Length: 254
Length: 258
Image 1 (cartoon, chains in turn brown, orange):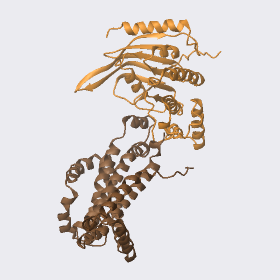
Image 2: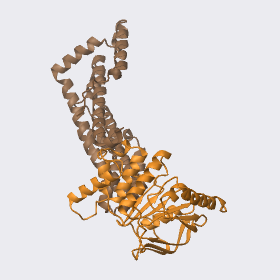
Image 3: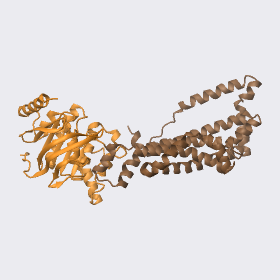
Image 4: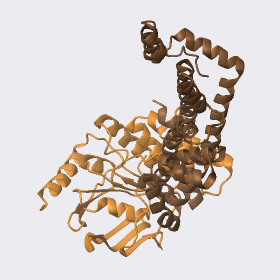
């Protein structure tokens, strides 16, 4: 049984301080109020957008795209990383291509992607999948290759079959690295999901809401989106950390 | 009387053993002309300076290393690969960090064809034998160095090996824990009477536990001398007779050419 603990609220100190500072500046005059929107106005616009459904729809559209892209990218990434780590031929054929492609910033692919796959949702999903794909491949590969000799020797001593060695020694040893990859993938996926809305045709999403807000001089809407993006990113990262803590319990015991 | 003389049948026979490592494409001789017969139930200590190949010798007997010339025979059979009839304990306990103590010990039985209930029973028995009862569900990270090494010993013994190989098993422990575990090793060995070959840096430990002490020389690794320790077990650590032998072995080791 885990005891219920009060959440540590110290992490909220800086964001709250920033908001207060923001609000103070916002009330210094109308010129300031344009760039630094008063918080009550942000709250009002939040309420307004909630009622119209814009905000919820945009948030949901971005979130669904991120989650879908994350699952596709991470699944393919783990698979490719595992194949390269365990099969020499694949490693020799694919690894150089992967290492070269990895050097190209995702933004650099956008013209190509838009040419090949258009400017609609599929292209956005592809960008998100790629963003989740790269870090998962790398970390899975290195995790599986990084098995310690002394652990491998324990397997040999007890006549472990190839499968037993993989299942009980190489795979559990690789999981910390795999989770590192997944955490990077969540961050990149969310980032690129919002980013893709700025580069491709407008469609539902938080990035698009921001663009519209900017065009209409509605800084309150922009700020609202920024807050929502930050909070969602933080929550998804926390979720992965919690899962990792559960799976990698052996690492965190004291 | 607790003391029984070691059996007279030869358990392990090493004849004309030599081993090269290839370093910078040149062969480096690490073991040369090793001849040793170990009787059933005997406790052999191996001492020598670093680089004398004592660990390599143990790894060859375990089967983890291969490609030697000469012969290593266990019960007449030539050794060329690991087998469950030889248990090995490393200096580093090398427990699998993602498994609990119980899972680590049980892992040794992965490929032993006995009923599940018997496996469970044997694992519990061994954990009890090494004094880790109550720590079955602890992860290696939660154990002290001494406890982790106890778990490693339990894992090596759970397959009921004919020969137990110990590669500086207590080398990384503090003095007090080391003395305690030496006594435990002696107790376990007296109870099970398996054949033991232990590599160690600690001459006192070698003499205290061993029926015979093998002194090795480096470059290339070879046996200089084998010293008998003709005293019954369990032994008294403070016995002057043991101290005399210890001093002889120590003198022999320190007088040797570099």
